[in-house]
Amino acid sequence: MKLTPHDETMMLKTPFHSRCEAACEINMWEDWKGYTSAQAYTEVEKEYFAVRNATGVFDISPMMKYRITGPEAGEYLNRLVTRDMRKINVGRVAYAIWCDDDGKVMDDGTVFRLGENDYRLCAYARCLDWLMWTADGFDVDITDETADVAALAVQGPTSCTIFRNMGFEGLENLKPFGMTTFPFKESTVMISRTGFTGDLGYEIWIKPDLAESLWDALFEAGKLYGIQPIGGYALDMLRTEAGFLQAGVDFVPAEEAVRIGRSRSPFELGLGWLVSFDKPIFNGRRALLREKNNGSEYAFVYLDVDGNKPAEHAFIYTDSKASKEVGTVTTAAWCPTAKSNVAFAQVDAKYGKLGQELVAEIYYERELKWTRVMAKCTVVKGPVFDPPRKRQTPAPAF
Image (cartoon, rainbow, N blue to C red; front, side):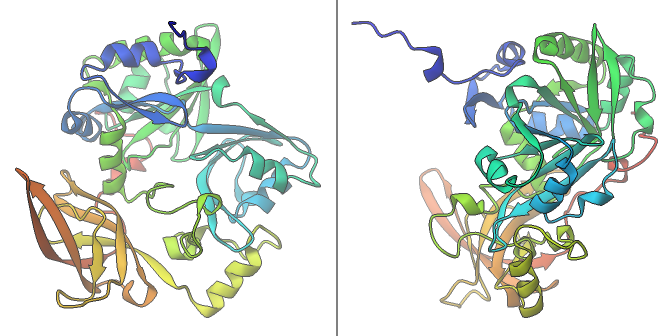
């Protein structure tokens, strides 16, 4: 008997899928929260350099998007996240994290303040249940609008020029973490100066039925400016070079942790600057205040690793003869633009100071032969790629 798959059992497709599929020459896909998402279109290195030298386009439609409205939407969000949302004005975007009652990070994301009592929360993980539970007692409405909003990340030095070629004049004056709207077809698009690459770039938000028209207009405007689609592999290289953490990779969201001690607090992820103790109540405040006073168990560090072999999943030791590890690498990559061998690691707190010298146990395979290297590494400050153009206003024309 021949079985016919039903729609509800198949992978979902984003509103841009027809264009992504046509561009994906090597047919390399992955599952992003139930959606078909390209891992690579042609060559990973080519896509990486498109963002650093021209413009790369990444389909971010599968990202979870929650609309939060109602008379107490602001108060609710201020209770949910650790950052003081009272300081975020209409038309601005804020990077934020939210914790459980033990002060462990549930997830991170961006909060768009669309109106006085109108917000959009974008997140890595599905968290509608958690949002609804924490909304108890607040006069708010929370809607999952993931499928109702199509979105692209348009990143790289020529991105602003391409948008201006589409008629979006004045976009160059948009400040980082700002957002604005422009007419498009018979509707409008929202453009925010946000992204996950650490470069000059934008994210554009539109109704799904206009997605294909937007893609076509974007690539027509950018054909002389090096525009090309990029996949998840290139994006991972870019975000590593820019020093951005990824949930599920660099930390275990608290709700997903199975074993005790595997989740982390904002302080243990280097995100203590997002914790505002000058507001009275938020999830995890008591536990975080206690940790701030007593100290953290772990530290998140950026490592500059000797050599050119990425320290993927490596154990970290104090020296080459030590028998007990003091940390583990969560992300590692050779970063072409910065010419650096970079690693993110979680280490015992006492080894997290700048300048601390450590050793990474690296294994790599060439022609079926595995080689073990004990590579020296040093704790360094912040990302290895931080170009002025990513925050320059007006945005430079390339």
